[in-house]
Image (cartoon, rainbow, N blue to C red; front, side, top):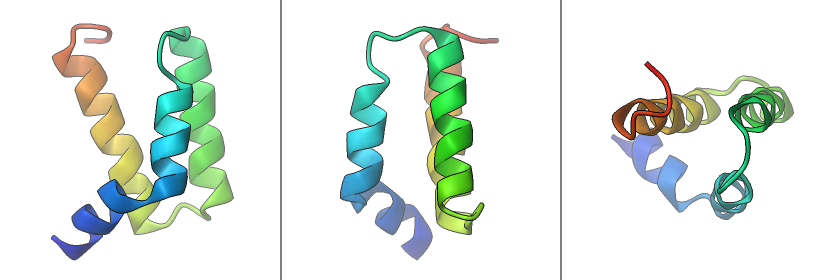
Length: 63
């Protein structure tokens, strides 16, 4: 639960997330890959990217 809260409150993540608005799916996935690498595949970055991908699924952008 703590990692989840920290993930949402991370200003750098919010900036990155907002940068993906109205972009191609390819751009989104490349950005997520870069985010994971920049954060050394930390548990927090994995939660962030996983939640983002789940949101894409919920919105019908991916299956």
